[in-house]
Length: 152
Image (tube, rainbow, N blue to C red; front, side):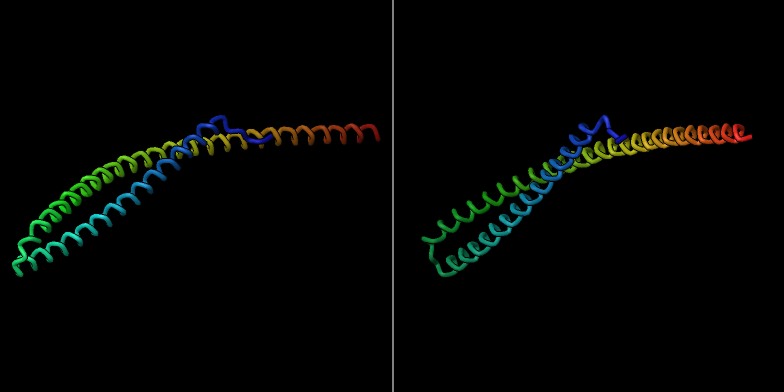
């Protein structure tokens, strides 16, 4: 007889929850990395435009100063927006990681229960098998005893 775990469907659901939580964590980590890269790029562009603004000020090119100032303000706004998005994603990541931890715990609980139930099942099967073997042995012994008495 094969072992059937009555909570197999729930175990399967727990495994799916764990996989979904893992995917959310990995996706959020990739988004965070992309946001960091975008912040670094914006920062580099900001510094290069700031250097160009300084050159314009030194060379007395006043007409370009306002253009660079607007551009720098836009870059600062963009950097701040990216930082806000980064903070939001990092807080989401913490939530997803906690969800993943809980999903793994839930899955392990069901897996441990399955192991316990399977061991109980195997014990019962071994007991049944031993009982059958004992009965067969007793019948053989009695048959041999009966045959020995019949020969005498």
